[in-house]
Image (cartoon, rainbow, N blue to C red; front, top):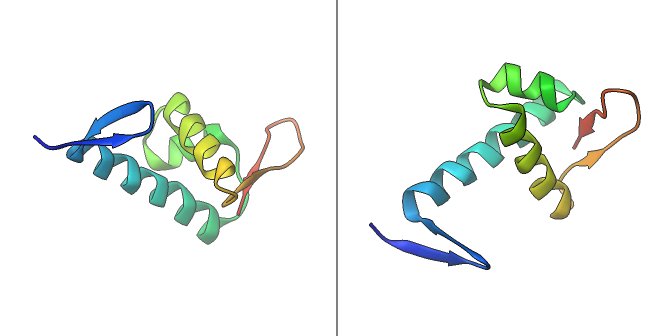
Amino acid sequence: MRTIDVGDDSLSADQLTVRRTNLGLVLRRLRDHGPRSRATLATELGMTRSAVSTLVTELAERGLVRVVGGSAHDIET
């Protein structure tokens, strides 16, 4: 299996594909359905809250989403 260097971590090509796919799923869900919490995203997408949190952090670091106030910390595009 091919391994791709992505900074400090090395991911296999399959893992990188899954990560990119999941980033796209989170981003599209927010675009299509508006702001929502990480917990709601996790439920709607069938992912763990931890996985969604990691993906949202990456999207926020790239400037593609932002976390807005409120008790549930909604995410928006």
